[in-house]
Amino acid sequence: MKTYLVTGGAGFIGSNFILYLMEKYGDSVEVVNVDSLTYAGNLKNLESVEKRSNYHFEKADVCNRSELEELFSKYDVDYVVHFAAESHVDRSIRDPEIFARTNVLGTMNLLDVSKKFWSTEDGFLPGKKYLQVSTDEVYGSLSEEEGYFYETTPLDPHSPYSASKASADFFVKAYMDTYGFPANITRCSNNYGPYQFPEKLIPLMIHNALNGHKLPVYGDGKNVRDWLYVEDHAKAIDLVLREARTGEIYNVGGHNEKKNIEIVTIIIDTLLSVLPEDDNRRKHISYDLITYVEDRKGHDRRYAIAPDKIKKDLSWYPETDFATGIRKTIVWYLDHEEWMKQVTSGEYRNYYETMYHL
Ligand code: NAD
Ligand code: TYD
Image (cartoon, rainbow, N blue to C red; front, side, top):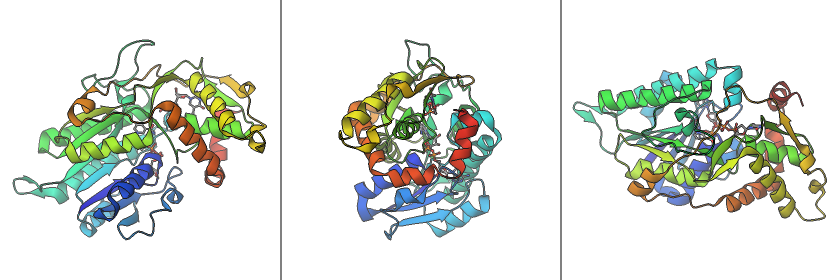
């Protein structure tokens, strides 16, 4: 029986990861979800598992050492999967400090507490592993048309978000190199799927289109991201945790590069093909909503992952093609209007108005 301590489990990828574990392993795992519930954390994502005896929610801040020590005393943790972070680039441009606190100091704190509880006289307890959930954004930006990020690509972050994630990666590397700490790092491309907060491109466009709001495309709309369905990311993380040699770094991506403007048109097309002719929600949806707005400062032009290493070592590949994944995602948002209503009330409105002026 393995005990997973999942930080940020109430966020987008964390909650998908917990649901994946529960589905895959049933009662043969223990899951401890450690989340401080910032604006991005939502326990509704986990309603389907919250009553299970092998699921435990613990409200705690990864920056708070004594809270983490209490949790490591309470549970015999085998795996730490560290998702908790400030995750939105636009917010990092406006307020970098919280990114340094949560993403850098929070990671260092978690590493140090894991090290303390897993240490033995001559190394570490067997079977323990820490996984740092990182991002392809630490590599910086690729040229318009060619090249891929490999695990050997030098880190060259540009935004405060990616700088904080790169710093966190270096702390993980330092703990592996200095203390022989048992860890892996995964660096994934852009995720999409159910439960993503509508500050990110795909859910923001779905929400705006359904409400007849403008669809704000930054700059010329030709920046490229490599999109991966979130469940494929969850599978990759669990595989690395269970099967990879400690110390290894893995890039995770989908070979699914799309320009932002292509994503926006695919969303409009898919909404129109999924919604029945007599559905009232069709009435606002139109290409005329697309609105080019001022570009993001320091906007990285292109991200693309070469997932060769994870394919070769662990036989992982992205199982969900984009047409299938985006359809599933859109159907999920159409079926979860209440969820969207709840997360777009309150603080979200202030954020949207200050950010977009539309
Ligand atoms: P998210 O913003 O949806 O969720 C972050 C979660 O962390 C929230 O539940 C929040 O409450 C929690 N949290 C924030 N600060 C905390 C703190 N101090 N203590 C405890 N919990 C805290 O983020 P996401 O999109 O699910 O991303 C998860 C991780 O994956 C992040 O580390 C991110 O850098 C990485 N990542 C994301 C993507 C992507 O496309 N979303 C791609 C690659 C890597
Ligand atoms: P985002 O979902 O914020 O992810 P990231 O910046 O981490 O890649 O943005 C994806 C792309 O979409 C990025 O190039 C910025 C662009 N974008 C827009 O054009 N309009 C928007 O309103 C948002 C949120 C993003």
